[in-house]
Image (cartoon, rainbow, N blue to C red; front, side, top):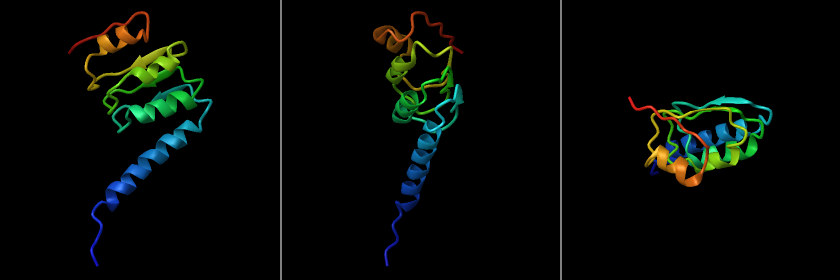
Length: 108
């Protein structure tokens, strides 16, 4: 019998989806740190949509490559940390989409 070598990858994917869905049920959550996880744009979209009270978010060193989901929570976010993201240009994404009125970036 041939063994399916994709099975561990499938279970890894299912576990990540379950974590995002589990977090999204914490509707009164105000602070969330997903730094250094495999959070991606799709997971971010789900969390932004399902966590209406979210005020503080850290997406540093994640797989988020598009900041457009943040537009939905721009009026409620008080703090956003996003170091070491692989996006085309953070300044460009913020300015073109008018995500936040003022942004300061630091390069290291």
